[in-house]
Image (tube, helix red, strand yellow):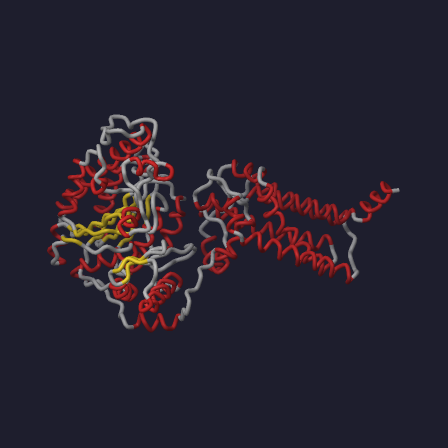
Length: 598
């Protein structure tokens, strides 16, 4: 009897069972296009994660439940839910292939820009797209032929609606959880796009609904910020004081001679020290340590002390210089997908940017192309930029010194800089690092000598993003006697501070009537361009002028719950400066989210 009852139940609900199976299978099938043109290993990563499968299939099922509760039709609900999912997933697939960037929630606000951009690409069809479309067609035909039954009972429809509603609430908690989102990933996919697509197509989009939007500061009022900015009239750079600006951010460069490490030969830092003497230099307190390069980079370019998820044109000093008639270009001899530079550098105003792909890959056989090549190409690009009669703003990021540094062998022809009673792993890593950075300094000197001899006025900015990686848990630092006590002011600076140098050739010094030497203040990266403009005698945009005022109070402001307020290092904003801090937060938010340049 029980067996017959089960068989009868299955027969009675055959349409529902087939409908659910087909929806689930199609939701799974859509994962074929979720990772765009990235490695097929990502698809196998999906297969090994039940959570990824569930969180990408569930949206199709839940959407179908809602439609079914209204229409009572298996076919209509299947057709509409799978059509919507297919449209999204194919759009996401093409965006990854063309822009190496998945669709996130914020992109829905950019439909107009996306439609214009779509006209610039040649769409294609491959076997994965054919499988998806064929699966959609076959699935709809199957449901149409074998699930023709319609539900008319209002009570049953309400029950189905309630199930869909409860599931949507449950999954909304799952989709917004950062803990779940990070836990189902893998270290194999650490680049921004791969980090997202390794979690599927629909799931990252739904997660972004809760996590991509920037939090509005407390007491934020856009009109108040507009009124504040109106107090600082936009200032153009005088035509007779325009000079070329070349900036370089070095990966993980640090002057280890300042740490007094026993057994470390620091004699070759003399090159760097000579450059410092002929520069205006100060300490740069970053938000990061041994990783997160792009934080320091983009704080410098935008003048904001914290970053956002850039999905469209965003205010920056690059855009200001471009408006002032500068060409804006740069180089990073590594993959353009790293930190999504391919797209974000355009959003920040760069007209031209060179990467490893189709460029530096032909100039070097090294995985991390050498600085001698980078410096040579920066100088060549500068020479070419003279032909258009416009001043140049160039910003580059090197990669040769990127960690980790080998802990089991020395580089060919390397010199031993660190000796003494240290572990072999520590000496390998440190000596490999020192060999690279000392080589960088020699190439930097050659580069600056070329700029010094150039008749065109040039101001050069040099800084580093963060300290280098030195063993898991900073173990090599500990071996060398460097203990980062970040709760103290000195320890905090040891951990987070690098240096900046602002150098000028003779032609620039003459035009700007400044020696470009001396000691500058200790600042956060968001103020570095301010210091450049001050040395050049330029006022800059209204935002920069407003930030100059705030810099006098908060010269160091970090995302690590530390700041310097009125000369005092503190983890608590003084009561009399809370309004200033709120003004800083609001000003930064307005600058990041209200694009001002045509």
